[in-house]
Length: 418
Image (cartoon, rainbow, N blue to C red; front, side, top):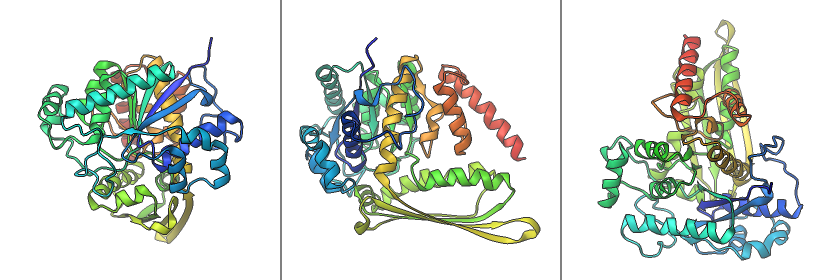
């Protein structure tokens, strides 16, 4: 049986993360690099598309070919780019759907001068259908990597049901952002969708329900790559040793396009919302002095620095501190996760799993859930659940059954805290 071929359509194809994905996959095809950094490289599964068989396309507000974009972002060196320059020069993004009211610092171009939201969705679907036909892949996945949009109130009535959302689309409701349009186009087109950003997209109730009805797997949101990954590894250990966290001060500096987007307070609020919700859930109590800051600092480019100071109280009331300094490349951490998320969403579709795929929570800061269940944030437990799902064990296939299992697990965890 021929190996599976997967097409991945990326929102934000010209960004630092997406171009690192594109360059990395080309290097893998050439045999120029090993599979270091790819979490599932050591977990062969017959249903997962081979890395060599993944084709990329997608949208961006900037029209540059991918080789030019790689040079601009500065993640990869000249020698690395030279290995795949010809292939990347041949790829240009499709015109994206943009709205400066949702992301002020990233303008670029507007997509195809489409004003109606229905026309925008139709254009996105045309792009996806053409990609599948031209590439000859077996199936598609859409992954959202565009710049962070401003916060949206997900409790608004137009987001409550699929029917209400359809009416809002017809009315070109100004509260519908571009991220929601991409999610809607993918879901109604039967294509799995993953949101690697903090932007509000498939996490509104209307689109979660629409994904369930269409039997389309969705996952998100906000990729867990650096500082939050460390936090979700360290915090369970502190809880296990009964070390009380009195305060946790986290700060980040970065200078890439993501940092520029987050230099807008409205977009920054979306990011802080997903980063700040993790710690209390793991520890089982509210950390009153949990501070999280992100600063745009252009000289760093994609070389992000995350610094944490943790104040602790231990036995006999004695005070202690822990300090963590993580110097990392943002896109080098994110790119392999994007690849694995796409492969897993495709696997879920093959298995007939639709709706919110909670088991992929290991990849995200704010994992999507259904039926009001609280997400599991502790990385060791997330990893256990994910590996069980990958092996076809543990959670049943339907979203409702998986949600019920999550609720039972959450109840057991709260009982343990008490």
